[in-house]
Length: 462
Image (cartoon, rainbow, N blue to C red; front, side, top):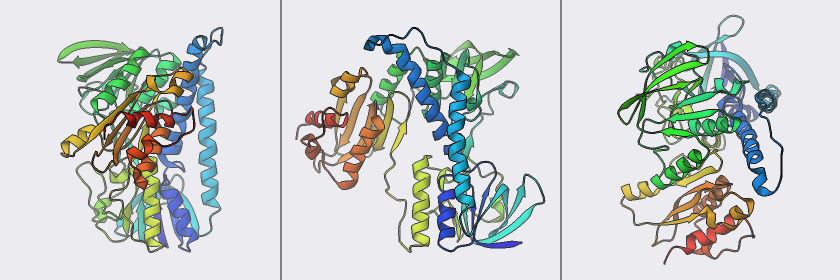
């Protein structure tokens, strides 16, 4: 058995930088990864999907070019080239990350599956060779999450369904893509493949898409997707799949209580993600988990077992790369720099990269109402935003929830081109305590999208 000061399990957006910084601080550290350096974000999430979203946007712009006075005599979507472009970018990031790990002093990298033997000991089964055992007083779990596969759909295991990982490897555009799940991942892929040329049908079990968002934001995004001829069924439950031949799948679906058959060529399962804790052997440690398998942590990301921490998606809560990275900074600064930081009350900004995108931070109007807050709402359609008019894309809206007494911004949702960037301006205002009445008269460069924050808050009466 080999002893280390620290063991990091999983090389996601928390695990890799944490392992490097711990090693740099003089801690002899082991980083264990079962697959690829970089975790979901680099290999199956942000990097590949946003690269493909960019290709889909180019196709969309090509389809609209005549409206802008630029004539293109037809265009062709080359799925193999799109995949190659995506793969090249992923490999560059993955290989760069691995090279940085391998050249870090005091840091060892081992590929294999890690399982706890006891509280502070793990065994690792490499792809080749014998099982090895390692011990450390500090262990950090950053194993991420995986696609949830429903177990209540008859025949699902008999079809070649896709996940958010396997769909990235398609080299042909699906004839008809049926998506089970109308949340962030499903909507991004749905619009992407519609723009590549697929017929797309989205099935959402709730009454509307994006049930965590306000109704007007959900309705705006639904309208945008339907304008691109994406078929959306809410209150939809899939009960059965039957595959007669390759590329010939029939789904039996209940929509608003009425059964119907939908024929498709591909099925994407996008109902959510679950923590990767089932093979860790946490029962050997006493580490507590919730009913969904998420590792329970305190505000400093330590489990109930002293010296064992969980970072990123595996602990539940907001499953975003930037949250995972922030987890690393909090743990490192507390342990090495002796600070007293916690994750309580940190901002949770996020984006959905449909086109136009959704940028969100703070609370929604629905949450303000549930909490009994005194609040006002400011809204501005993107068709009243000068920059949007000039660029030829007025889809979407700006929305902010504010406290009329303190004039602080409580939350914002921006659906529009550069929605995430506009949201980030409001997040900075929230972080710095800049009130909406100051933004109303702030001097922004013209013509920018953020300039229209003037007009957004002009609609509020003091």
